[in-house]
Image (tube, one colour):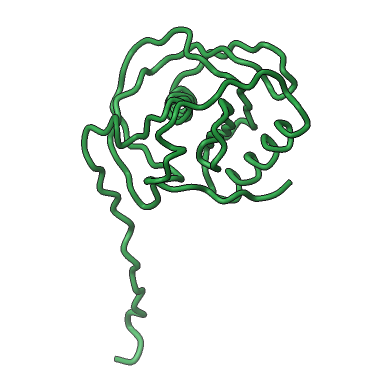
Length: 165
């Protein structure tokens, strides 16, 4: 496995519709492995092939329950909606509010080429929609409702009280 460079906003591959993957070859399997390593190294929860400069319909995700790989994913059904904050490995240090469906059914193929159907909600549903958008050349900025301000906890100096007085 190898860590791949992540392309950032402005790279034309992020604005293109990615190509279908006709079959899982050794080259595709290696790309999937490399994408997973890259996602984990970048502390991400999802990564689409266009984000590593490859215009193929492949996404990898891990929202804390183990890796999920989808080849040629399609949203078969969706329901509900919510607005929440998203970030993106291809748009570093930027957080925006995006409206997404709360529940999804996604179809596609796994890393072995077998058909899969996934029911998702919560963060998993949001991450799937975000990554599938990448395959269609859509960035979170295209769906942005507003900028989000992430406030980091200030570093607090702890004073030693009662000493030296």
